[in-house]
Length: 246
Image (cartoon, rainbow, N blue to C red):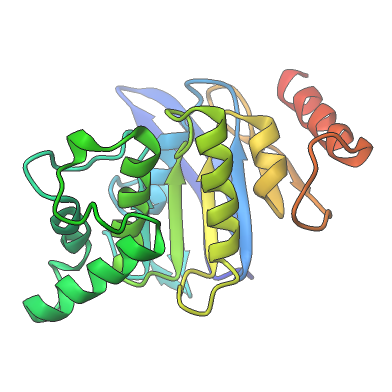
């Protein structure tokens, strides 16, 4: 059994069944992506796992404890950055620590170190409106990591970025899993980009159209970093596209 377990998750909205009996598990020290057709409920499922939305039935457990609300060990990175424009970048990162018993100096020091780690030295006291999309997402990731979670949930975190910036951030996130300074040991990412999923993931969960079920769970056994032009990479991509469309 994994440390994060989704068991027979169902969601109905207005009598319509959105998610139907989804079950899977995620193990420690792994990167798992969820792909599926647009509108199938991928992002909604992620919010249920985060404790932001209750399922109609079924359970989400983390280390055998049922998740019914947000917890410190699980953090969330949003697609649209979700930065508060009236706060500086430092203050936005500090938000990730505001609900914990930590004095102001310690919070500020922790936020400052994370901004430096994510290449934002010199922008600590600037506001998000002066940042590029990639820099904004780095602030969002720093904020999510500030609370020292074990699990990082990411909702299409690179979809608003140009490809060069997105690829740099993908590599940074993968490297983060191997860093002793970052406590994250498990990443669960929703994406519509099949190539991105193959580039980053140890396992990929393929969802169907609504009412959404798990169509396939595919392990990706390739060493890092991954070259998108190899036969093995292309074979995995083609296999996943076939699974999505059949």
